Image (cartoon, rainbow, N blue to C red; front, side, top):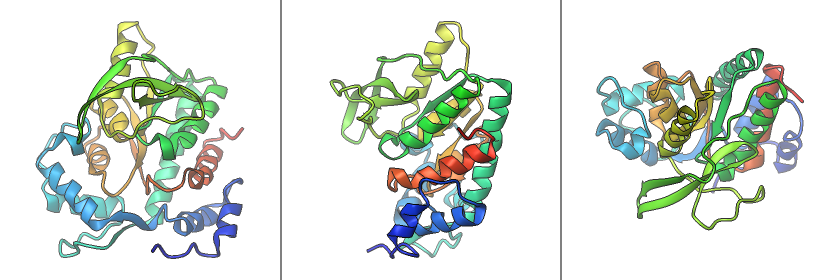
Length: 289
């Protein structure tokens, strides 16, 4: 069982609908386990690091590392970027994310949003975690649009063939609240239904190819997670996003200069627990609506 939320669930829920101070947001991160002791296990993270060392495309998620990354290198990097233990003898239990690193990442994330808004830059948002993070990205899309940014929504309905653990599966690109995601064929396209979970970089490659073929504008900032960030960063687009401790590719991309900002955070908690992060980031970026 997970430890109880500090202060009780009623207090945690009360933080969801308002802009928090840095101290209050830190407490929220710990209370709902977005940071601190998170649900991602050490076993899951170590497995990802081993697969990354072997350059397994399921874990590279669109990144082509410039150098060889051994598991020991990844442990040191993830300890620096997330706060996990760098002790290779720690092989079980739950991972830990340092909330100070999460806050630092959110501050840098807000700076990139503010810069895009000042320039009126075209932006692209996409997620492989629509069940959890669609609301987070949707609010960013609304705020950036209100600030004068063009939120790109190309390639709607395009087919994307993605290799999964169940074999090759066909998905279709779609947008909800101007956030790109993929759906299984036949799934209803409504704002009440989210899409499929994926780490693949193929959706963002398909979208960017469609933009290029129609003559632009190309996004000056890509916002998302998993393959949306790594796939865009690998192609030379500025990319920022969220990542869990078992997603080393984004942090390697940041270390190698292909990804601008990565916020270390558990990416699979309840969707409403991300709402204070949204409000905090938009407030710091002067994009609060």
